[in-house]
Image 1 (spheres, rainbow, N blue to C red):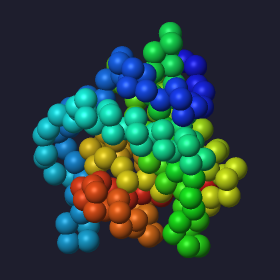
Image 2 (tube, rainbow, N blue to C red; image 1 turned 120 degrees about the vertical axis):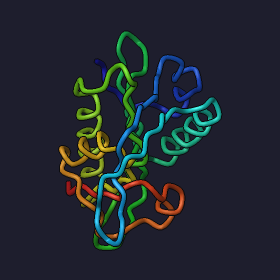
Image 3 (cartoon, rainbow, N blue to C red; image 1 turned 90 degrees about the vertical axis):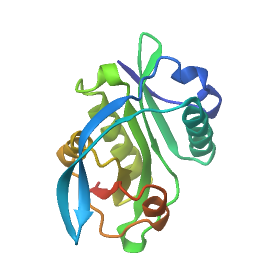
Image 4 (cartoon, rainbow, N blue to C red; image 1 turned 60 degrees about the vertical axis):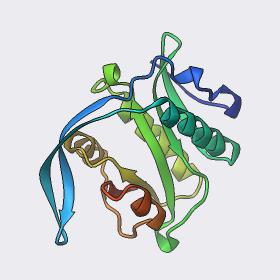
Length: 175
C-alpha cells in the first residue's frame, strides 16, 4: 500500500472509480436517556454518484484551505483516505476536525484505516491541535475501530456535525 498526501487537482470523481464505500450494518450505538446502548438497525450504507460528487467538492475544499487529504493506493487505485480540516475549534480542547476516514470494502481489516488515522493524528499534532474531533458512523464495527484508536466521547460537541448526522457518535482523540 502506498500512502501520500493528495493535491487539490488530484481529487476528481475518476479517483473514486475503484473505491467501494459499501458497508453492511446490523447494529449501531445509540444514545438514549444519556446512556450509550447497542440497537439493531440493519441497513446498507453506500454512496450514490451525487454523494461522490459532494465528497470530491468537500475534499478539494479541504486541500485548498490548508487541510490534510491523505490517501492509500494499491496498484495505483485509491483504497482509503482521510481528511482533516485546517481550523482549530473547541476553545481549550483545541480540536482539529477529522472530517472523513474511509477504506474501500475489500481492504478493511488490513491496517489501512489504522495507518491513515495515525497519519491524521501526526499531521494534527504538527498543526498545534490537542485533540482530533470525529463525527463517526455509529455502526458497532466503526465504533470498535475508533475505540481501538483511543477515541472517547467528545467533551464538547460540534453543533454542525450533530445537526448534519444526528446518529453519529461525537468522538475525540488526544494527540
